Image (cartoon, rainbow, N blue to C red; front, side):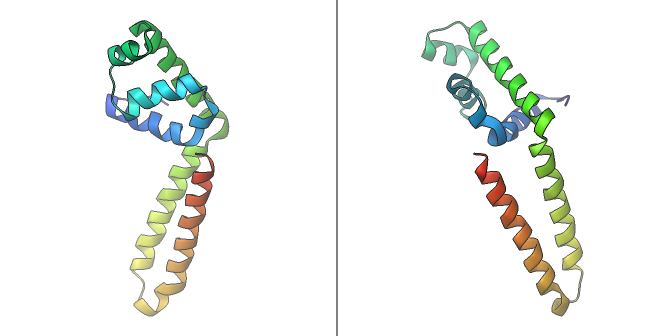
Length: 124
């Protein structure tokens, strides 16, 4: 997937990290957390780990590549996005129904949201 700007890239890496982060090495996890979650600069990470900024950059690029490789094979983040969009559409349609008819559909939508939440949490 081509990412257009820094914010989109950060969001993309964070989503992929949520799904596949535990499959990365400890060092890759640490560097990604520092850079994307905690907003450290390359220089700050380099200083903390007494390595060069270039080494930090290479670790980050490799970790990002690994995350994208997992997503290209497993498609968990893509599936999650599709399910989320479908649930939002379902809930919007249910909201248009007369009140007496809504309850069973609302319960079904909630069950689907809970199932997705449980499934997503299993990957963390």
